[in-house]
Image (cartoon, rainbow, N blue to C red):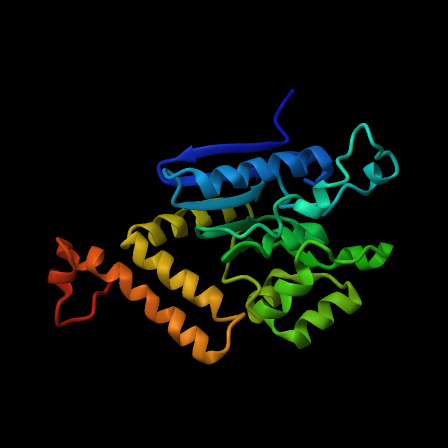
Amino acid sequence: MSELVNVRLDSDILYIGINRPDKKNCVNHATAKQLVAAFQRFNGDPKVKIGILYGEGNNFCSGYDLSEVSTLNSTNFDPDFPQKYRYMGPSITELKKPLIAAIEGYAVAGGLELSLMADIRVCSRSAVFGVFCRRVGVPLIDGGTVRLPRIIGLGRALDMTLTGRPITAEEALHWGLVTKVVNDGEALNAASELARQIIKHPYNCMLADRRSLLNSFDATEKDAFAFELNSLSVLPDAIQGNPSIIRTSGRISQN
């Protein structure tokens, strides 16, 4: 029996792939639990510097498996699980490292919410985004109402959420929901290239700036400035014995 979530470490990059392609990678309870385990490894493994979340086959994730809902009972469902996590699994987990979502095909309903976990989203030209759960009366409960307006703004988030309409890759790029659109079948390769680009720079400094950016959303301007100043603690590590600082001293690096 194949895993519902494929996890592999390649150098410093942890690849996490939802593996239900025959179901458009919709997530059931068992898949959600495996996703939680994968992201616990992502946060806890010191060998992992960055992660890529993707879907096996031609789709990222089409949401929660609604066909399973009517069959859930005390023997196959942990009632405490949605309180600790969410129905999609790790969707409200605080990630300690950067995550890229590589999106092919559908990223809708809970699948859209999973993609919003990522720091950066890359998608294929035929990718489709949307709050499709609007059509069946299921609310966004996996972080969508929190993250979506932060990423694309309240007005556009309301458009997506109230209408449930499909959003094309072109519109997603225009809105800032994704930062890059590539040819079909190339999203994972593009995400891998981006991941390698990110981790080639001094790592602790990058993590400090990332934490400061994320903190600024929940803080007053005064507190955000103070938090940003804490990033100076990584500067000695960056300066001491770092030849790239010497090479670029007095000029702007082109890389």
